[in-house]
Amino acid sequence: MDATTQQLFQHLARYLAEPLLALSIDGQIVQSCPAVERLLAREEGSSIGHPLSDLVTDSPGRLAEYLRMCGRTLAPIPGALTLRQPSGQLVACRIRGALLAPPPHPPVVVLRIIPKDGSHSPFALLNQKIAALSAEVVKRKHAEEEALRAVHARDEFLAVASHEFKTPLQSLTLQLELIGRSVSKLGTDVEQRLASKIETMKGQVDRLGALSRGLLDLTADEAGQPSILCRADLSEVVRTTVGRIAIQIARAGCELRLELEPHAFILLDVSRVDQILVNLLSNAAKYGAGKPLHISVKAEGQTVTLAVRDLGIGIAAADQARIFEKFERAVSHEHFGGLGLGLFISRQLAQAMRAVLSVSSVQGEGATFSLQFAAAPHPVAESAQ
Ligand SMILES: Nc1ncnc2c1ncn2[C@@H]1O[C@H](COP(=O)(O)OP(=O)(O)O)[C@@H](O)[C@H]1O
Ligand SMILES: [Mg+2]
Image: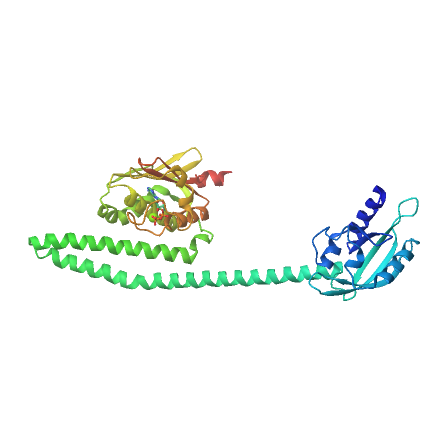
């Protein structure tokens, strides 16, 4: 086989994408293509050098006669043969044989092999591949639907469970309030001892309430809904929230320091700012090592920033991005309880108001969480434009 016939064979093999063999006139295989080896169930290239008669069940005499005929013409001559795979499996084929290139090129016969059952045609192979791919797609779709159903079921369960917690918790808070009042009338040292126990119980009830609210927030996907923003003084909103939860912060043993600039007007959603601030403050109280907490509202240029700063354990630089993800925590359960949802929900709530929630911290020195808003233009200035 010279270089030209070799090239010719390779072109044919590539473009026809059919099982092809190149044979010398005496029936030795000189070239093969992967499709033919698949048909023979042999390794690629392993049939080269073998006489074709070794791989078929046809009589060598008839085969030699057929190849002699093919070696005389460029017009393909039809024929038939039966391939024998190493396992003994037989593949009946139609064949077309012809001279690969005219003289003076060495006489090489190219043989197109076409299985009679059509199972090895390029279309059949393509169909098999398409069928396998379709089956895979269907399987993945089922798995995806199954996963979605599981997520749905989990969310539904969490929503129902956290909702069910609400009523007994409210009743418990009320009962504790009533017991507290009755005890305060005792006027003895028993009162002192019971009062501190009642305070501890109230703290635990607060904690349970916060945990179940976290679960409800997660499942309600309220954070994902668009906000209805109104123009309000951020400092006023902060003052109201702080007033409401000051007792809980005090219970955690933290002193609160406020630095609220007046007239910090921005576009906000009051209930979302409230929820974010409650989350940030409960974190600051939990991770703040009992040291004072600072809350500030500052207007600077075109932005207004609410910052909650503590002087507690801080957060390692490597953890500062991931703590905003669902269920991500950077502390051990042994030391601090929690679900790892507060910051995830808070960031979603912030995004719904087009605000940015970020953290800066040095481990061991405390953390500052900042909620940054674009300053709202003054309504008079707006209408004057
Ligand atoms: N003020 C803070 N100081 C130190 N670490 C904090 C602070 N706030 C949050 N973190 C870290 O971020 C994690 C995620 O916070 P969060 O989503 O509120 O979940 P949780 O408080 O339930 O763990 C916490 O587990 C903690 O590791
Ligand atoms: Mg938290």
